[in-house]
Image (cartoon, rainbow, N blue to C red):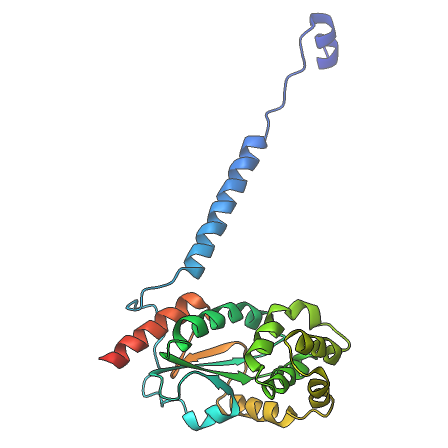
Length: 242
């Protein structure tokens, strides 16, 4: 007797299929837990004494401080620790690291403990990286370098694919209270292109090819971000104080 005929004659309900819903919920929860734990271990700040923190290579030479003139720096010349970043304004990873560099300025540079030097390394695949680097330096002519620097990273997704970045950057200059006409003239004449190119040559000289590359003195970070950056800075400050 067929199943359908048997149910008709006996009035028995059709057997219910086992629901997979609890299984799906369980798997989803496990995935979420794994993601949360992964983010925690990736972003958690290690202790300054942790053996997992990067150190300078064996017999590594100090960073050639005379090259700092080709970057843009903030903080005292005699700060016990110097943090240097080689970055591209259009690089997404650099945009994410910008939060860490802002914290660095607020917590260590402003207090005189650290000097921060930013080197332009516009990558060839990013068409607006060079104009962005020049925009920061043109703003610097009006004492607005770091304001434009932060604005470029904060609004990275707005101008990255722009066909007319000068127009966008000129608007930023106006919003920052700069003389927009002077800024635009600086951009259209490419006044600071050679400065940016010189910064890029420094990167090539040091064999820096990826962005962001971040050094604390002569120690290259392996996971650029606030956790590792602040831990290495603290370790080097403690070492300098001894």
